[in-house]
Image 1 (cartoon, rainbow, N blue to C red):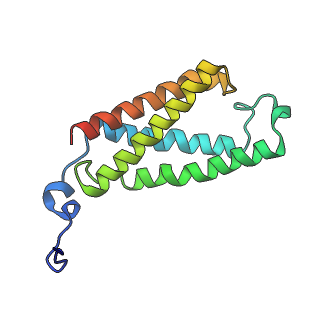
Image 2 (image 1 turned 135 degrees about the vertical axis):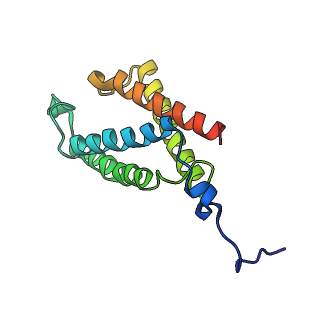
Length: 147
């Protein structure tokens, strides 16, 4: 049975969902994610000495991968930031929170694997990165569980 779209009003545009604010932990997570990841993108695009003190290890292929990662990460951070006003219980807000949570879950998995296997990582930032991704992941899980 097809739904008539003539009188259809999406939940996110109803006053109940439009006027609700996301939980404070999720608001802080979205803002800090945008700030930290934007800074990361700038540091990666400039191949900052803070991240890469020994630049001799960076082959042209590695540099391309770093640039590609930075340029594709920024739109995700910007999109999450721009859509942060949609409540997690709305359709759009739920999808934003879901993508945010999956992204950080995958980041934690990668960091955990690199830490356990002894693979290369940005040593001076490993625990900071693990902590931020862990907090952001936890905030997303809690928000999605409570919607």
